[in-house]
Amino acid sequence: MNKRFAYLIIASMILGVLVGWACNQFLDPVAAKAAAGNLSIITDIFLRLIKMIIAPLVFTTLVAGVAHMEDAAAVGRIGAKTMTWFIGASFVSLLLGLLMVHLLDPGAGLNMAHMDVAGTKTNATTEAFTLKGFITHLVPTSIFDAMAKNEILQIVVFSLFVGTAVAALDNKAPQILELVEQAAQIMLKVTSFVMKLAPLAIFAALASTIATQGLGMLATYGKFVLGFYLTMGVLWLLLFIAGALVLGKRVVPLFGVIRDPTLLAFSTASSEAAYPRILDSLPKVGVRRRIVSFVLPLGYSFNLDGSMLYCTFATMFIMQAHGVELSVSQQIFMLLLLMVTSKGIAGVPRASLVVIMATLTYFGLPEAWIALVLGVDHLLDMGRSATNVVGNSVAAAVVAKWEGELDDMPDEDPEPAKA
Image (cartoon, rainbow, N blue to C red; front, side):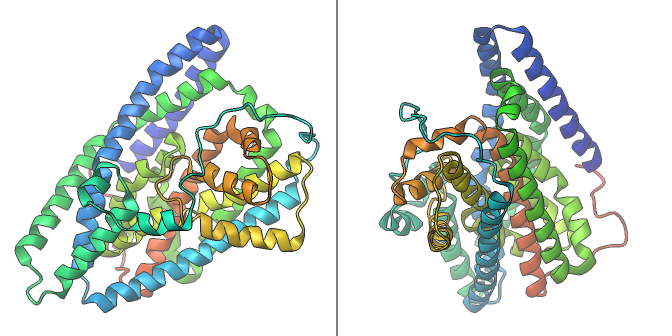
């Protein structure tokens, strides 16, 4: 069934591109925009359904996972190993983006130095980008408010407290724990229902985007887009190699089982859309659910490898296009700045754009220069969302291996008999 689902997703992507191209070519701009708006309704409903289940899914699975750990020391040990991997992966992603943008030089020849884009409006804002804002944002004033707003980081903090408290009790609060585990199973079943709509949402997302922007946008930004996807491919290779060093041959089935959630994240340009499916997929290759439930929510807040890769690549692209050169020391400081800021904007819409704008502002450059990448941001968001899925999946498997929580795989195909 998983293979059929993957084929259905690929078919939906191809059909979406074809329908979007037809609308763009054969309808006038007003009609094409109207068609795109109608198609986007399907995608919006699907993403709303995903957001509907994210908060209870994170809470129930994380509480259950932490509660089953031996004690608070185990939570701290696993958390330390998880953050060690996250910091290392973040640094590699940022550095790779910087090295590749210099090697490929995608901004050369654009001659944007004298172009005024100050009148271009963006939906991104750097208002939430403060150290105080980030620290205070970690702790929810109300768990119900955090769940209502899908503040994953705040839900994680509350869930860690609840799970650790349950683990610290002598009797493990069996009735509460059983209730949480049953709720988690119910949410996973709800997730399976929602995921059946994924191919339809993927078709609508691609068709609506191509209908309004056309395939011509690829030609205009060809070098930038291709350069970013090439860089992203190198990062995937590095993640595969790093995973192989820790997991050995187990890395091959790992990448096989995350194929569907990666395609889903790519097609919808949403890492959140893939979260429930990763949660369900990783145990099939031996990663125990309590590790998956612990690592994934943290990863969605602290380990956005694709987004960090994009931050350095896009920031330097913008500077290249406008003829701005940074010294080596300035570029090193930029990496450190991005390392910090990329951890402080969890839950902020269009987070990568926020980080890039903050970086431009820090170096005294106009925020409006971000407009240079807005035209293809959705296309690039597809790639970085897929990369975030791969990075967090590898992280969960590696931490499981380090903790001795990686079960032996059965000889038969780990895929279930039915979806």
